[in-house]
Amino acid sequence: MDPNLVKPLVAAVLSAAISIRSYRKKSLDLSGALSGFAVMTIHFAINYRFGALLLAFFFTSSLLTKVGEDKKKKVDADFKEGGQRNWIQVFSNSGIATILALIAWTQVGMQDFCLNSKESRLMTYLAGGILGHYCCSNGDTWSSELGVLSDEQPRLITNFKPVQKGTNGGVTKAGFLAAAAAGSVLGLAFVILGFLTTNCTFNVAMKQLLLIPVSALSGLCGSVIDSLLGATLQYSGFCSVRKKVVSKAGPTVKRISGLSILDNNAVNFVSILLTSALTSIACSCIF
Image (cartoon, rainbow, N blue to C red; front, side, top):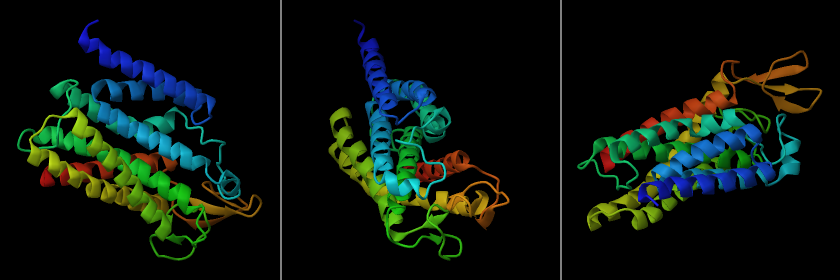
């Protein structure tokens, strides 16, 4: 078999197995499973580390989504068993990284590389952007899923006034710590796998360890940006009938914060775009 076909074949088989399992476990609906298969295949076929970032984000976020489901049902008006992400959520949380991965493929093919601006500033930008993308997604998910389970009173990030759990833009110290931890986990996975898949000089390889604190900051930064957007451009109100925070205005809903400009998927997309850009710039300066 042509060696150039082995990696895409492995990527397709692995992605199919994970997508089918995720559909059966209700982590993805049918549209999410199909789009997830396509996105995952592209990531793994181009670079195993890109695929590892996607998998680490997906599995950890799916696991945390299922933690404390009974408690989350009482708070989340849009709660779905297992999370059940659809194609819109898949693309809003992985679309930018997929485009960056495809650009990287046009430059170096399926070869892995260390972040080193002296060799290629473009590749450093691209890798930093992909890493920042998933650190943001993971940071937002960890902070949301763990923050809502905390006994700590959420406060609106724009004025620090106490708000109901489930309010867009409501933050806790536990949530911020979770976001930083989520980013560092991805950074650690990216660096460790890179020691096995790249061929760099010792000094350049050791410098890659700086990606771990960069990733932690990206996770935290992504959570902050997401919270700011949620508090200002995403509507939150308390429904007196359902006794939950909802994202649409109505006769039985009292406004808490935000304007009805962005929905949750749009907030995720914008926060990912900004965090990805900031992480790219940071990596180009550090490496």
